[in-house]
Length: 173
Image 1 (cartoon, rainbow, N blue to C red):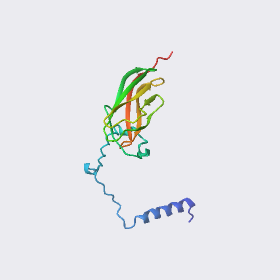
Image 2: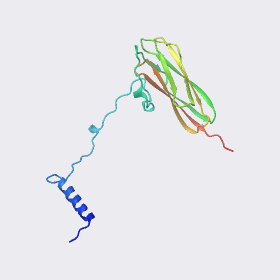
Image 3: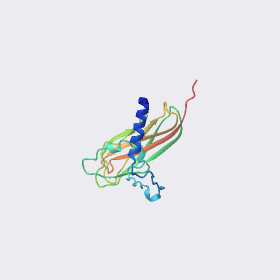
Image 4: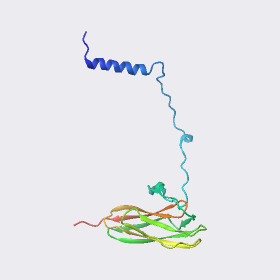
């Protein structure tokens, strides 16, 4: 009786798999997921308004000195409908609601078309300030959502502002 090499290998694999389950139960018990099995997400911190827009938040360094807090009148602005090539500006107003001077260390737009301008001087406790955000729609089309990340001596150390617009594409000739 002659066996091919392939037949011998297949027989060995079959025996190997069969022996893995010796004396074991082949049934697998499963149950439907209930609402108590689902994790409840933690509430976001005050300054982290649209939290989903900041992939670098975990890498942000905590402020070295005393911290304070700031609250914006609004964390989002919709410019509405623009024509491609329009440049628009919005002022985000905020208040230092803490007991220490507010230091805005870094303000950064999510792309080159979104340029924030932050105050360079400390904002006293209880005082107000503004962050100017310019959006240039050149080369942008349809729905646009951009963010501005502000690093400051606050807890949490980053605050996210969001701008939106619908840009009508320029007609091509």
